[in-house]
Image 1 (cartoon, rainbow, N blue to C red):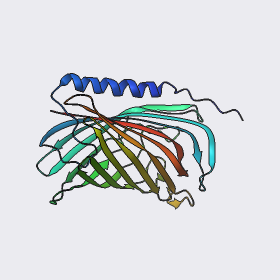
Image 2 (image 1 turned 60 degrees about the vertical axis):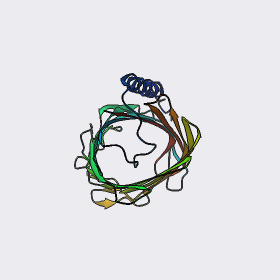
Image 3 (image 1 turned 120 degrees about the horizontal axis):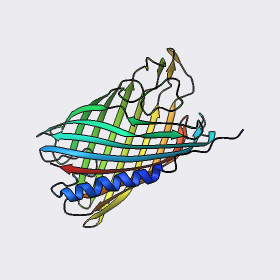
Image 4 (image 1 turned 90 degrees about the vertical axis):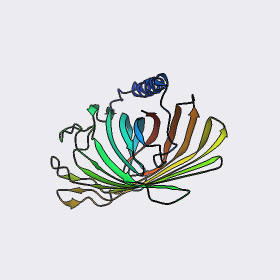
Length: 284
């Protein structure tokens, strides 16, 4: 069987182009600065605009034993999430608006546009010497979804997300942890309900010199069995472990570049590939 080769080789170039354009735009504005190494750090009161470009590439999917199921899968997903955030004295409110494109060479199909918008709010716990931020969000099915398409940029269903961020700077080190639980609802168009998902993420960076930090980064994901027509699809639970590094570079007094490179080292019942993501924050 001849598998159609992916037609989305321009996506890595698009990722770099948009990321650098956003970065240099913020440098030009001059009055902003990158606030923190992770999403759980406290920020001075005010309005911020965060830009999160990401690119995920996967050449295969895996079965329940972690073996290759579909080779030459050719998945490229590019996304630019625009996230306005307001920090009060102890609370945070935010919105996340993704724009991007997903292509899968195995199906010779792609989809692009505005994705599923997320709205959330959180409150910093009144503890000293460490930042702890519980945050709750709702994802709305605003992205395009067609049950007859093999590839969709939107998920087509509501999700509820609860998170806890932990941020602890000490000396030249900075530790960021995040624990996320996605409660996923049924897609009424396809009658498919994805399994609920749990994520544990950790980043530990060390300041080598004044404007440069780096350190290991890890993401663990575990998802429950999905349901189709209210019947559980057995042995379809998702597992994924990604291990890589985070780089933090101060390009100017006001702007820092944050870049994560995370290859999947193990995966079950899902894609196995490479995630590259960045972050730039502008303070108004």
